Length: 281
Image 1 (cartoon, rainbow, N blue to C red):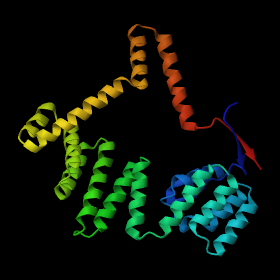
Image 2 (image 1 turned 135 degrees about the horizontal axis):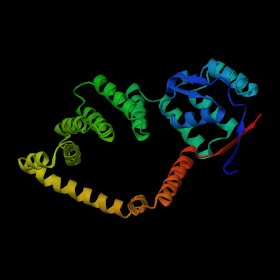
Image 3 (image 1 turned 30 degrees about the vertical axis):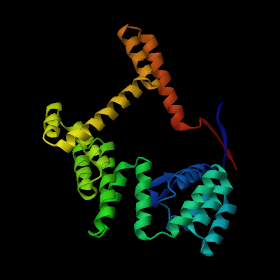
Image 4 (image 1 turned 120 degrees about the horizontal axis):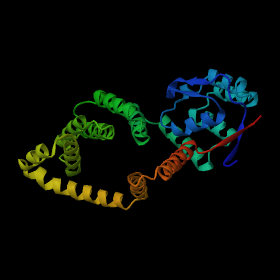
């Protein structure tokens, strides 16, 4: 038994549907994980009497439940309520708890635009791509037209999200619109990258040959692509793929499937983080 973890309270028979972050929670450790992970999204409204009652009954932690209800009645902030839970459970590191407290306190003082932008950036950084695009689009629609810099940044972020979802035509349009506002060379390079991914080689070469600026910046793009290919060729991931291909081509089925199974096990272990859980009542 490895990565043993002694957990707090009971594992809920009836999970809690946490509406503000659209997830279902089964234990106090899961609750702490989602508090820290979604610290840019949480407001005081996320901490409800229903949540506190669930902690007391389903997780068998009536003392914590009463403490939270008392603090809530005294108008405790989202930061105070979150830290009460995190420090009681001690699932997260002190650094994570301190950072969560800082973010929640700062977000409470942000205006609507700043809070919405922090939320959108957080979704992007944590690869919630569809949600991030929606958040950036909502922000752009609600931002006054004269504020060109904000529009350019939001369009750029939408381009990044579309590119990460392999929606290169949409990405190119976003980057182009952003570039028309800022005239930023880096944005144009990203625009060319999106075009390169969606066009045939002939279409792309025809396009940049008719645009002197595009042709010049395309050289920058090609240099980056070549460098990325070289780095990947030296990576452990590429080495393992080549090894698998060699085993398969040589007909070594047993060794091939054993190697595949080993990689799958590693990925599963990385995803789980822990393998065995005990409950502390």
